[in-house]
Amino acid sequence: MSDTTANESRAVARAIDALRRGWPVAIGSGAARRLLLAVETTDRHRLAAFDPDGSAGVLISHQRAVTLHLANQLPAAADAPVRIARVPWLDLDAATALADPAHDLDTPLKGPYRTIVDGAIDEQRAAITLARLAGLLPAFFIRDDGAAEVEITRAAVDGYEEPARLRIAAHARLPVDAAEHAEIVAFRNLDEAAEHVALLIGSPNGTPPLVRLHSECLTGDVLGSLKCDCGPQLHAALAALAASSWGILLYLRQEGRGIGLINKLRAYALQDQGFDTIDANTRLGFATDARDFAVAARMLALLGQDRVRLLTNNPEKVAGLVRAGIEVVERVPHALPANPHNRDYLDTKRVRAGHLL
Image (cartoon, rainbow, N blue to C red):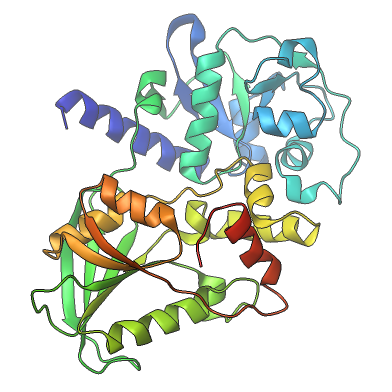
């Protein structure tokens, strides 16, 4: 990574941190510079400081604008974020309802709104991308001037890649129910707070290990949620690793397919309204799957493993490891029976996300 790329990556990381803390961030320069305050993490005092005269508009994603029937207004006709003019009643509560589709049944009548033509379309697109990287609803209060905690360029956001500067931070013996002879290895990410772990069951014997990539799921792994199959998949994977000659479980801190716990719960609320798991994610403004499997590849490399047997039904996990330089010598199916609460969820993963049997 060049010094310029590294500096830009650090600037984007600082901007992500600032948005999560409710601080203003500026994107762009000159006439295209735009000042942003995330709707989700601000409060009335911060909004008043950011926008003392109440003139800041609200920026939402194009997809959210389509849902609100704003994309047919001439200024919003392009496939781009939409900037909405501020009116006295569009306060923080109204902006929050505007931003969060999970509230649509609670506040079904929104508007009328007037969109504004803004020449900084690329900067607005970068702003929406930045919100998604921060795991926040893609909605901002937006101004054309003012001070910001962090200043970044549009190019830095466009070129940003999830950092994977990992190092092994600690390891220890950890007997578990599935295998008494196991070792846990913790990885620290030098660019972000997430701490991933690996559980090694058995000892390397010269053959490719059986590997399971398991993304963190608080509701399924810890609370026993029946809406997904994550908890049962985790325990079945541990049993399969213990039954093999040796194996590795990579526990990735990528809750909700990478959108985070809070946004996953918002997606659950949308599922209760009738949307499937994919449409719920996209309605919130996130990708169908926002996970970064390059992190898993880096963990395997640090463990000295570049050839694996992968326990998965998800072809994207296979492709993600292969792109990052890990040879997948075999895909081992990993399927569990459905229950009445997750049958539709599993059907959606198979039919719409391409998961295999």
